[in-house]
Length: 439
Image (tube, rainbow, N blue to C red; front, side, top):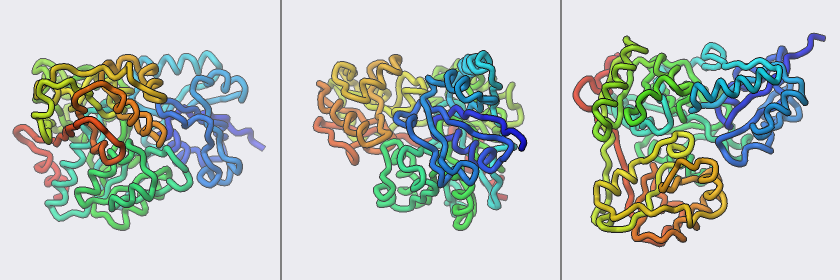
């Protein structure tokens, strides 16, 4: 019998599972020995379950901490390491490749031909060059435009499988009660709830070919709502990539964000209203050099504050979207913009008051600074976030997260929520370009 090639997949409970499902699951040339995990807490130590792993893996596949990578390569005689997660610098990717090669294994990155699933319906993919560029508000803008054209839009969100993977194989969200039924974390609710509020159905889960086939049954157009800066899991008929002039240069220095830029039919330069004009032009020039055929849409993401007077002259605790601050490496978000705009006397440093997993988050990501990331990958993190906010000595809490945190945790201090939407500047608008696409 031919000896199977032994594979280890480096991941973060998303792209890694998709690569396995689409390329390795029923492929008798390969044996996936293990996954490693990073970025997402409490994933390592689990298994990719037998129910999802297919007939070649009756016992499932173990998931280890990425810290054990080299030892795993030696112990299990790994031939190939497939790198399969996102929002990591090109330099860091090659540091990992060097570790793998030094341990004797090949290091590979699978491309779209092996991993993108084709749909029977038109697919629009929303991607970005980094976490926190503004995919969510861009997605909402696209949904609204398509709805105004009379199209039934069904969105499919990049995976966030933090719970029971078998139960999460295919998830459909059409009502707010579905969020409770699927035991959603803060991170999941932040992504799913805005779609529901717009009267749009959104799917997510683990097995993305099954998810696509279900979505096709009720959609005129499939919308891929990407996570981090990952590439689309589906072969797109139109790719929209969001870039961020607050981080000029990142569009060509992070994996796989540069791939998204090169794939783009439309590039949205977001946050123009708060960025340095020189940085905007730097990013614009890079887009033109890397992808001269892409149409460029200039856009802003202005903030809306429910009661700005509560901020004026107050000591404010600013809570921002977790992933944007952690692996997105942003130094501020909508909450800090609101604190400055409405005259907070100071932004309170939450670090002396953190507890449990929130303390560990600051230890792992020391560059977060004085902002509080809304980490909510599970029930314990949500409770730790609640306790941290309660302990923090402040006059007001500014909530800059995509959902209203007050719906899922108790905040005893006066609080203000900040929201933001995408607004195009000049022409062409997204609606103009989408109308051409639909025609």
